[in-house]
Image (cartoon, rainbow, N blue to C red; front, side, top):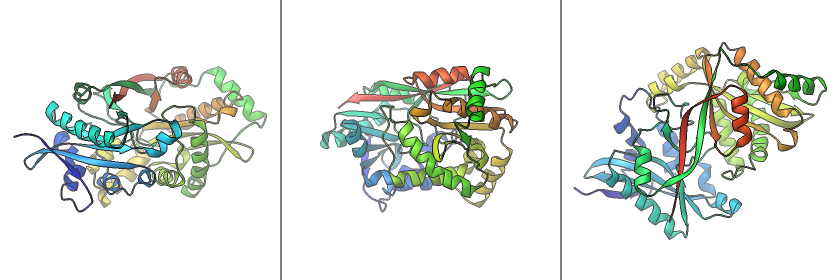
Length: 375
């Protein structure tokens, strides 16, 4: 029986539920896979995510008969394209059985949709949020993911993309900081202490969720300015920042979020999270009361952490701001009896961040690849 591809038009489409739940059918009891909460996928499918206030998308489900075999989202990031002067399409939420016929049908449907809009290149996988990194996992399959912030997938995913003609655009590394051996180099510590002693910077006090909610607004501003030199970046809108804040409040511990101030201005931040991967895996995409209680318990007990977001305003990077961030990171981790921390989304093109990662003793142990293909 041939593969058919169905476009999901709206929330009333009965196949929308298959789109949301499909990954569970191919990962089953896989001990490493961490499903998204189904409501988060449904929010995208229903176009209630703030991305769709300025951009567009289409959702495709592949099947043989009544059996779902794969899914993909095709996205037109209009705001990004205007900001960067491009005509890209993105693909996202790609999952498939190990069958090139299925993946080819999905990618072809996405490519046809993009061509109809005058787009000339397809790139992906890309996330709709800065908290969800892009890329297909191509190295490090034996390691757990960083919650749902970076994808875990079967090893054949990269081959399916390449069979359709996708080629590497950029790799993103995850590096492991070992809690027992991690030390901020003496030179960085000395620079940070001098900057703090001279009053060049101070550390914002973040102790409660109310403090964190206030700090998150400052973080959003620094995020938009400090990441502007990354060519895959586009500033987040107010509603996208508000959604990011809600995500911070859900999974973070206020004491782990560090913001440095220069006078009354936020100058930099470091986002560290308790690694809740085991409890999210156990939730199986359903945030019911037992699952939420398990997440809260793990938030207090875990000795593993995720670092997903470090930003310093460019004008403060060479005046001690970066050193202060790294000093505070060490103080935070050492104060928590940390087993280790996963530094995520380190682009292979960010020479400064790669150098800093090596300086801090990080060991690259996972690689995610974003692909591209002309249309």
